[in-house]
Length: 284
Image (cartoon, rainbow, N blue to C red; front, side, top):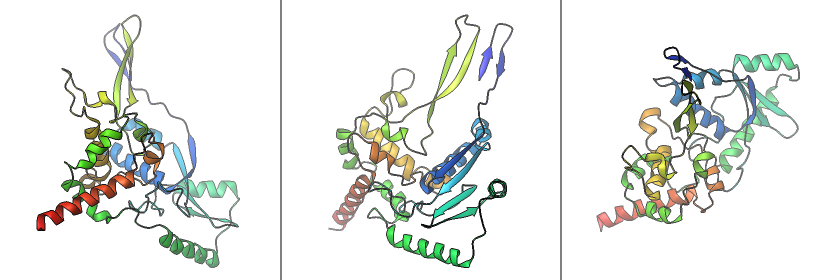
C-alpha cells in the first residue's frame, strides 16, 4: 500500500503480480498451496494473495517413491494427488500420464498439441503404480493420524519441548522452507520528506525471538522451547478444528534444513513415547 499526506491522506492499494506457470509441483507442495488458499480465503480475505493466485497455473508432478528419509507425506495424507492443480503428470517410465483438472489445463493440452488420449492399458498401469505406492508409503510415525490432535492435547507440558530448547538455534530455517508458514510483520517506510511512503508485509518467523514481543517489552514466547512447541501445534493441532486438516504436508524440509539436527519424525515419536508412558503410569 502506498500513501501520501501532502494534500490530505491519499491511500492506494498496490497489487503486484505477473502471469506464471509453476511446473513440477509435488503433492506435498500442492497440499501446502491448498492450505494457504484456505487461510487467505477466510474473512477478512487477502485479495492481494487471491489475485496473484488466480494468475498462476499449476502443473503437478507425482512422487513415485520417497524423496528421502525426512519425508512423512503418508502421515498427513499428502503422498497421493488430491487436487490443487491444473495438470498433473505421472511418470510411467516410457511416457507420462497427465490428468486434466481445470479448464486452464484443458486449454494447455489443446494449445500444445503434444498429447494423445490414454487408453485402458495406460490407465491400468496407473492403477498398478498407485497400488504399489500404497505398499511403499507407510505411516512414518508410530501414531495414527486421527490420534495426533489428542496426542498434542496430552503433551503440552512435555519434556520433549525442553529438550528441543537445548538444541534449537532459533535460526528460523524450519519456517523459511515450510510451504504452510505464512506469518508476516507490517513495515512502514516513510519517504525523506515525511509526506508519504509505503506500507508492506514482510515474511516473519515464529522461531525468532522478537516474534511474540509486544509493546512494553513483554515476550509471550521468549524461550525456544515455547517457540518450537508453538510451531508444532500450528502444524498438527490448531488448524484441525478450523480447517479439518494438518498444516504439515510431510515435505521434510524443516528436518532437512535444521542445523541443530531437530527431526520432525523424531519429535513426534518422542511425544508418542511420553504419552504412552504417562498412560501406563496412570494405570500402575
